[in-house]
Length: 166
Image (cartoon, rainbow, N blue to C red; front, side, top):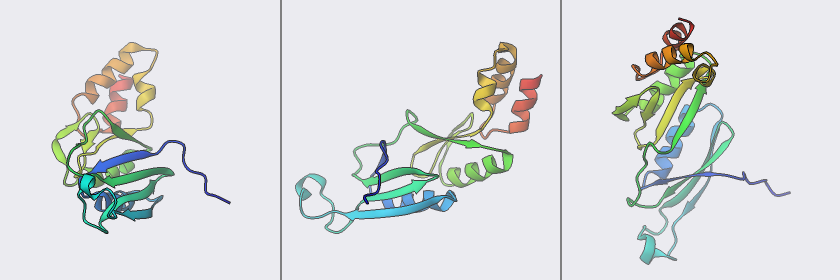
């Protein structure tokens, strides 16, 4: 029986750090693994210019989501236009992901729970109840919470909840 392929797979374009990034991400998430690794061959060398046998793609999985990391060259860079959201149960979990993913990243890009990791990939490390607080039917509660959120880099859940409750 054939393995079912995930309908939508996120492809991350790196210059030459695909394997390093996959190893980094799988070291952070408990439910993760590295899958197939493909290498560049002679075909298309005039286009990709990569060394024969060097890593082309690395398939990896984080918390049930499949990703492909591609060593595609320096033409494209990551931007904040795309980010990965990690919903955290508590402050301990939020602190863990923030600490691991922000290590070696761009400190200037840290705002309101967002960070850029060492590869330039953007992440949002947020409490599970953030969406609920943002969308509360009482606009005063959500506005107080947003005012507190906008002053933070890494989110402090108790401070947000305190502001939300008034």
